[in-house]
Image 1 (tube, rainbow, N blue to C red):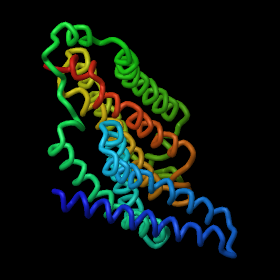
Image 2: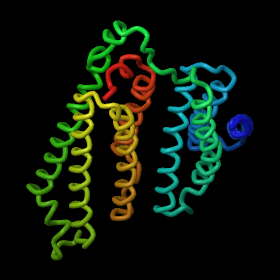
Image 3: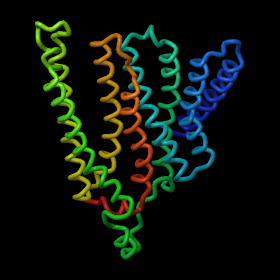
Image 4: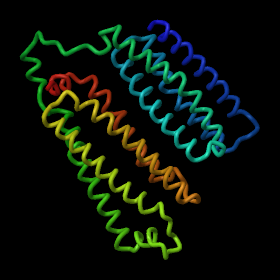
Length: 291
C-alpha cells in the first residue's frame, strides 16, 4: 500500500504542475476569450482534491485526511457522471472536457485507493470512540447539537420533494402539457415522452422512499445512517445529470446544463461536502448511531 500512496502522491504532484503550467500559458496566450479563462478556472478548481491529498500525505492529520477523502470522493463521482453524460450526448461536442475528465480520473482513483489504505494503516486518522469514560459517552449520545439540523434536513427533504413533484405534475396536467406530449394528434408528440414522464414520477417516488428509510435510520439511531445520508446526496446529483441527458435527447435545442439543472446538481453536492466531514468526525455521531 505504501507503493500506491507514493505513486498517488507523485501522480498528483505531476498533474498539478502540468495543469498549472498549461493554465498560465493559456491565460497569457493571444487568445483572450472568456471561455478560455472560464476553462482555466474550472481546471484549477478540479485540482483541489489533488492538492488536498498531497497535504494529507505531508501533514498526517485527521482533518486533512477527511478533507482529502471527501474532495477526492465527490470529484471522482462527479467526473464519472460527467464522462457518462458527455459520452451519451456525443463526445465530439465536448472532446476537450472529456479529455480533461479522463486525465483527472486517473490520479483521483489512485488517491482514493491510497486514502483507503492510509485509514487502515494509521488508526489516528479515524480513531474509535473511547469507552473508558462512560459518563462522557453518555453526555455525547443523543439527537442534539448539529444533529438537530441534520434531522430537519432528513424530515423536510422528502416532504419538499413530494410537494415539488405534485405541483409540477398537477400543473402539467391542468395546462394540457401531458396531452400535448403524449397524444398522437399533437405536433409535439413523441412515443418516448409517456415512459419518460412516468419514469421520472416513479424515480421521484423511489427517492422519497429512500429518504423515508433514511429518516427511520436517523430516529432509530442506526449505525448505517451516516453512509446512507452521504450516499443519497451524491445519488441525487447523479440522477439530476442523467435526467438532463434524457431531456437533451428529447429536446436537442434545449441547453443540457441550464441554471436550474446546475443548481439542482450543486445543491446536494454542497450538502455532502458540508455534512460528510461532520458525520465522519463528530464524537456525538459516533456515540449516537451505534445500533
